Length: 256
Image (cartoon, rainbow, N blue to C red; front, side, top):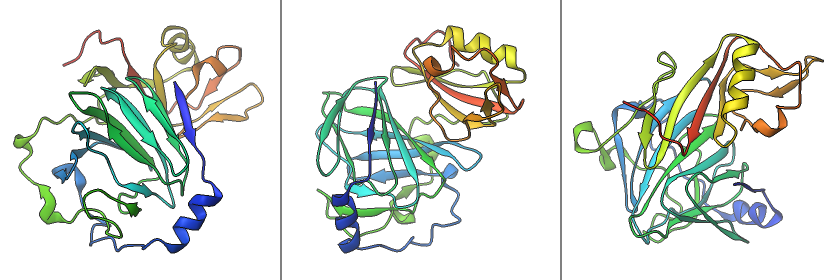
């Protein structure tokens, strides 16, 4: 299921009075070498590519992220394991494994783990800017504070289970939570058409390249959620031979 939190007038009002914290010197920090400890669990960088990054979050049962927003980036949340409650300033939705929430720039949101074993979720940010963060409310006293400082990070990666995907290695399947995740590269139109016939129930993000119709109008580009049902009826779908898609599927067939 695909849901969306749009930016509202209430978000704009709260954003005007919220404290905009500093970046804590992390603008050029290499997050691929750390695990970030959080009061609700931990998170780590899973993938970083063309102006898009993906993180894996482990949230303990009954814990939740702060009510926060990102002024300059769109966020996507995909549940990989467990059940979550995702809330904005005005509404809440329960999300199950395989569900996706799209959060517009400037929309305040919070995610709570409501299943017994906690949750694992994927967060995709577009564009990349981990310090684009405004915290409005927080159960752990982090209101008005910026992203975690280096002293709250773990540099010994062996202490946590961690998965990382690279653009250089495609078609390598990884199991995260109860989902199968991998990057698929398309070098011609026919390979994309074949893919669209098979992966009808998966979540797909365009990592690189563009998909166009017979009039050369862009349908999907870098950072978009690929809705396969909208493409099946287009006969002359085309790619620029640079398309890579991040596939997230419940059907775990093989992985390393």
